[in-house]
Image (cartoon, rainbow, N blue to C red; front, side, top):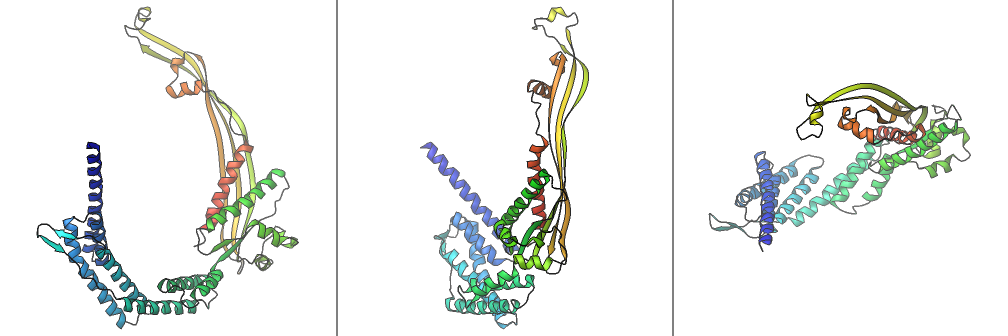
Length: 412
């Protein structure tokens, strides 16, 4: 029973804390003149704790003020020449309805000190709200329609947002969904990734380049999922498109065939990359010798206490610290080019170095000359490190991640 009571007390404590957190936020918004936000947070506070007296007092004060501010905004926008005044009006009606629902869903609120119940007068404007949403949908639809006539991708993306807004106000409004899809297609960057031809036919270079090509495409496809207007040509489509088109795969991408590439892949951007170098550093071992001395004062309880007249035991040893390391450096360059105007949007040369090393200790003499870390290295003798071939796997992943990250930054 005691445990149940304790759990109940803990639950009430957290509920009360949450209520006061929302109350504090409500007060801050009220001081800033953000009345709707203040009323919303005050109601949220009372959902957590309907007995929070300060929240009741604040909501009783701010709720009518918030409604009055929204009604004034509706009145002002009705008289204005704002192109999107109906969007503002519809949004204000929506906030009124939301506030009404928030307050109406609260349990009975009672002010203990004043011994009275607190109630709120709520009024819904269903007819006016519905009319405002229709007009808001129309003004956003017309704006999207006007913007969709351009060929500029940035403008087309704005057109998509206006068609989206029209549909948010009135689902299924006219042909907004179809026009939004059409505009979205025109606004989307379509990117094809093509490697430049290697200057060497070395098997390691060929395999590494091929891996990077497919990994780069996969990384960009994954990253494109977070972008609204980006599509990456996948491997299967690319391979099908280039079948029999050897002239495109000459390894030379210049103004003479940018348009041809665009038409072949239905793309407007191209990423080309070159694997510049693979520089392995084979495992090498270095060593460092140190002669050391140390001492320890003996205690009476030590068995060899009497063997040392000064009761100090001295230690000597020669420590050899071995370090075995291997490394591999990969370098590649890339370009992101607009096929439409041959403009280089981004280009860079990237380099990654991956290393592996292990340290161990050899000792001639007394183990007491070693510190704690060295003692562990002395006991755990593991002199093996990754070979450059093994490091290559990590290097390829790091290089592809850097390259894909740099390319994706160029898209919204």
